[in-house]
Image 1 (cartoon, one colour):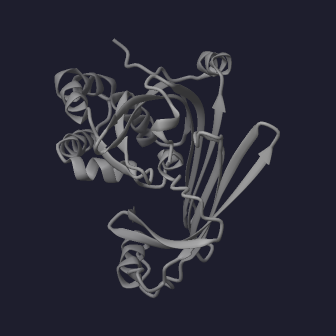
Image 2: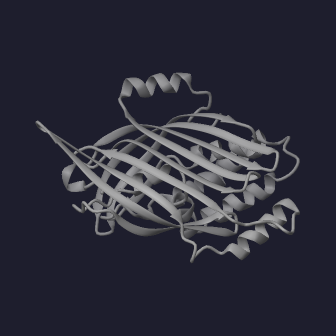
Length: 296
């Protein structure tokens, strides 16, 4: 956990986050690469946990579908986010959801209607879904707890254990209406030097066969492909590695999750984290092609 007693209110860090996703269904390929610079600031603590502000500084998008641009607009809408993490680094609350909802209702939704006015289908459905999400805090928290770069900040529950420990991880709605249950082995290692200390968390995950709803998954595949005698054998590869400094702030990390059915259905997600200084953040900001704020 990013322990508040080791830091002062106002302490901050800058991160370069890169996310890549590839989805293959038959011969159809959809992929995107997203880069972000975010500023993480410790605001304080209360009985519920530590309060952090995450602010989007800059972002970059390389995508093949309009929905990816919409996702970038959602990043802008949700900045800054004020999140509460408990002592196990689990996400407990978002303190400014009402402010985000007011921003959406008062101005942002009108901005998006102008921006996407040539979008003939699906715009109003996206708007309605976003409005509903912003009114449902449990669903909003669940959206942050998916397999995204947010996960880097919700992982560290180091309490001194050295042996490998296994725990369940449920990615709700990973396949639309179908959850992805995993069993994850976590291993902590520590390194000491002269006046130095660091630690690393390594995860290896596999499918939880007993909890996986294979019948529901098979029905989803049939609806997706129109093939009724489909083999729903799902192969999963999950690997994660995160390094922390002596205060348990993330320094660097990599995450990879691939789910695959034979050679015709694949969903692969990769995420990278790098702690950077202000000069590097400014350099990235100058080169990125998407503003961190909406156009007037």
